[in-house]
Each structure stands twice: as C-alpha cells, then as structure tokens.
Image 1 (cartoon, chains in turn red, green):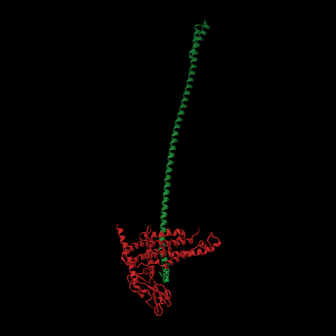
Image 2 (cartoon, rainbow over the protein chains, first blue to last red):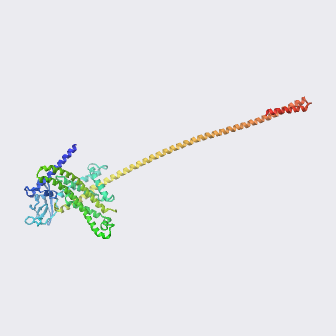
Image 3 (cartoon, each protein chain N blue to C red):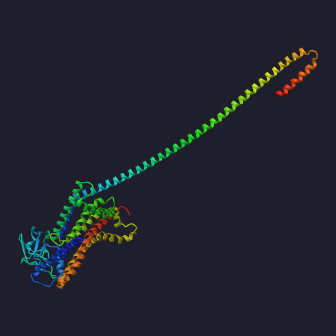
Length: 358
Length: 165
C-alpha cells in the first residue's frame, strides 16, 4: 500500500518536472524569438526541443554554455556558446581571430563584411560555414552516457575479481542484462562458435542506446538530452554495424550476394543489384527505426503538453498529464525495446555475414 | 527538425564510441564474460560430478544388492546340500545296518544248521553205539535166538529214526 503511494508520488513528481521543463522551454523560446508574447507555435517548440543545440538549457533563462569548436580557414577557433547570448537569428556577431561568426538556427556561419547573413531565394543563409566540432547538447549527453557506462561496468567487472561465486550488488543487477544480450541476442543469431568476437560491440551498443533513450526521458539537467532522437547518432551506429557486417562477411555471404545459389544466370542481372541494395537498406532501416521511434515518442509527449498552450487553459492539464504519463511509461518500455531491437538486428546481420552454411 | 552541423556529432560519436568500446572491452566485458563463463563451467562441472557420484552410488547399491542376493542363494544351496547329504547318510546307514543284520542272521542260521547237523550226527553215532551195546547185551543174553533178536533191533531203530526226523 505504502509502496503504491510512494510510486504514485514519484510519478507525480516526474510529471511535474516534465511539465516544468516544457513550460520553461516554451517560455525560453518565446523570449529568444523576439522578446514579445506571440502566438504559441507548437511545431517550433517541439522541433526546438528535439533538435541539437549549442547551449544546454536547464530551466528558465538558465543555460549551461557549451564549448564551440570550429575548424575555420584560419585554423581552430574555440569559445563558449554563451557568447551568442542565446541568439539563433544571426544577429549577435562573435569576433574571433579576425573572423566574424553568427548563429542562425543552430548553425554557425561566417558573417558577411557587414556582420550579417545573406539569404538566398528560399530564405536559407547563403554564407559559408566553418567545420563545426562543437560539444553540443547531444555530444554532451554522449559524454555523459559514456562516462556513466564506464562508471557502472568497470566496477562491476572489478567486483567479479574480488569475490568469486554469485554476483553481488550492482553486478547482480547488471549480470542478467549482460546474459540477456549474450543468451537471447548474440548466441541465437551469430552462433555458439563465433559470437564471442562480437559481444563487446553488441553490449556497448545495447547499453549506450538504452542509456541514451533513458536520458531523454529524465526531464532535468544533466539529462534530458536525447542521443537517439538524433538521426546522425543512430546513423553512425548503423554505419558501424554495416562496417562490422561487411568486413565479417565470409565466402558464403558474398556468394549469396553476387551468385545467389539456385538462381538462373540471366536472373543474376536483377538479383545482384537487389542484393547489393539490401546490404545498404538493412543499416538504413536500423538508423531510421531507432531515430523515428524515439523522436515520435518525444513529439507525442510534447504535443500533449502543447495542448494546454493551444487551448490556453489549465483545464486541459489533467488530460494532458494523464495521456503524457501513459506515453511516458510506454516510452520507458520503448527505450529498452529499441535498444534490444537495434542490438538484435545488428546481431542478426552479423550472423548472416558469418554463417557457415544453410 | 533540421540536421545542423552533422560533422560534430559524427566526429564525437565515432571518437567516443571507439574509446568506449575499447575501454569497456578491456576493463568490463572481457572480465565479466570471462567470470560468468568460468562460473558456468564450474557449475556445470559440479553438477556433472554430482550426477556421476549419484550414478556410482546407485551402482554400488546395485552391487551390494546383487552380492547379498548371491550370498543368500549360496546359503540356500549349502543348506539344501547339507540336508540331502544328511538324508543320504541316514539312508546309507539304514541300508548297511539292514545288510549287516541280514548277514548276521544268515550266519546264525548257518551255524544253527551246522550245530544241528553235528548234533544229529552225534546222536546217530550214540544211537548206533547204544544199539551196538544193546545188541551186544542181547547177543550175550539171548545168544540162542539170534535172528529173532536182530529183527527186533532193526524194527526198534526204525521207530527211533522216524521220531527223530
């Protein structure tokens, strides 16, 4: 009974935090546009919320400035993102090494001689931009997830050295997850003989994606950044899976692509392009599936909260919160599920590449 | 959403992921998976050993039972043999005793017969000598009527003979 009450309290607390973060996001956004109250644009708010950013917004007007690292024509330029003063409209000019930089919708450009941007016919900036290696919000979240993984798993590994026998403490919690990846993902798909080589990759990817997904569901600093709703991040992981698959491919695998067994020779003209296309569509599907699942969940939750502002009444709040709570719990499931699916499919593709015979 | 400056996240993701993979592989996954595997092996070995011991125990028990059964069977057969031997000995003894008895009886009979014959012969001799004496006396007394007297003696002897037989 008391446990139930506690968990209700906890969920209410989480919901409150979540709504605060959305409120402040909206508040912050309106301020940053042009300082005056204008019509609420849910698309703008949501898109801003799920996009990468040079600042890590904490609450209200409080933001954590992150380092901007630019590779310009004159070499490396670094400064803190706070120098743009939350400007996203290309108005604040930052002068470094005799170059002028402006930020327009999260992209940093070289400013023109007059310190302004030139726009083309479609209202896109026509200026050049330097290569941008900034520690953005998503990169910061990546660092955080990686650090947390090191902090969790290295002590877990140490605890195995200290005492033999049944796992204790954190190891007792982590071992079933690791065994799950090994017994349910790696061994059935890759096979008992070859799975061990790929375990480190599968485990790293599984936990990194899961943590990345979960961070996005924690609505306060230093979390709240979602690694996996950035298609670039999921794309990089998919490319790594693709590379591992391609370089692990044995004679069987390439034979299947370039000389599909049991197919008449003339048909190979059609089959080879199809099979080669298949090599690329698999990782592409991996990338899009993870990105779209996580992004969709965030968009739904944010849309539910936006209802309050669209209807301009707090009376919608209970409905919004109830639905958002449901979505939130669903997202917790999806966070683990998508990590599982990504790892499972990676293992499946690797398994196809190293398979000995049918 | 727009994809802005993808190079930053690509660069950092590749860098961080590779470093994370290398570090975790060396300091986390390999030790953990190794420990789990060796534990699994030791558990499997222990289970196999227990199973082996159980089987051995069962074998031992079966052996014991078999030996016990054999011993029982041997005892039974020994007892049976002893009983048979006893019966045989008794039967043999009986037979021998009977044989001996009948032999003794036969001997006794033979001896009796011999004695009887000897006695008869003696008797005959005595009777003969008596008769001779009697005849002598008769001859001495009645020397005149000799023929008449001899006939009489002969008749008398015949009578004696029939009564003896």
